[in-house]
Amino acid sequence: MTTTHLLIAGAVAIVLIGFGIHKYLKHQRLLCDRAHLMREAIRNRDFTFRLPSKGLSRGERALQEALNDFSTYIQTLSAQKEMESWQRLTRVLTHEIMNAAAPISSIAQAYLADPALKNTPYEEGIAAIHDTSEGMMRFVSNFRQMTSIPEPHPSDICLHTLLHSLKSLQPDLTWSIQLDETATLRADEDQLRQVIINLAKNAREAGATTLDFRWLAPNGNDSKQHLNSTHFALAISNNGKPIPAEARSEIFLPFFTTKPTGTGIGLPLSRLMLMKQGIMLRLADRAVPGFHTTFVMSDL
Image (tube, rainbow, N blue to C red; front, side, top):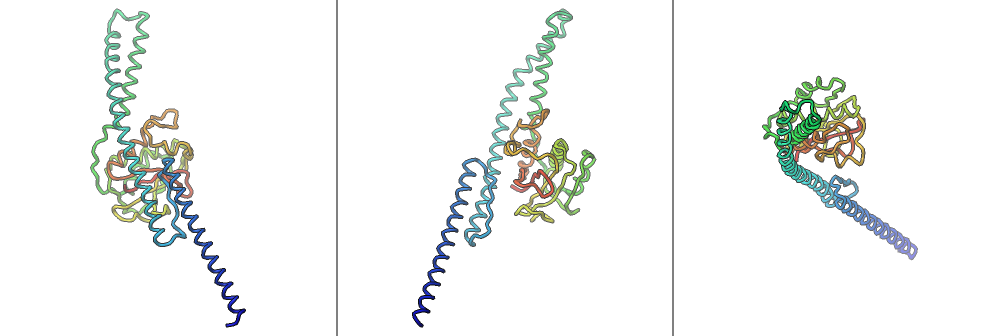
């Protein structure tokens, strides 16, 4: 081999080594960026992060997929603890409020029944006290639903049949059911029906004209069927007004509402009913193409 050949071979080797070092350093920066993004997401209590595994080695890809699954587990556990805390708080508050309001209503009612009070300056004021206390008890009674959900009785439900039976309740919506006629879901039928009715009602109030039902694959894409009997993801989408970005993390908090006349218990109650059955209800990071909002029911 001549000196020229040696020089060329050395130059090629240097280029290859340099290219390898560049790729290695670039890959390390990518891993550092991923670690930073996940650390910031956790610091900001955003447990919905899912980073792509494309371009990673086999071991790194497995680790990233495990971290993505871990974020889902954290989100589920956080939701469970949050709902348990709200249940305990609601139980205490409703008990105390009812204990205070009931005697006020009873005493006011007794005074209003006294003929001596008729047509006096006090009658209107006591009537207002009575009506206000009664209204407060009705208000509190609604929130007691958060602590008095009956135990579920799961069974295999034919989704096609259930959804078609509910279409008449929201005739202003077009129900697009992208599910096989044999598609089933194991859940309490009455409670699942209530959840779907609530989602349909919310969609209509957001100005939606179409409600869409379909299975999702793990990567979030459309799927013809759920994975198996224990792993599934049912997407429920609508084309109504999108949920504001600032409200997305709050919609499952009890008493939070963006509607002037809303009570803020529909979605939290729906999530709680499903969680008692081993099903998670969440807002998808990205809506199914063609829609503005997608909720997902999946196994815990």
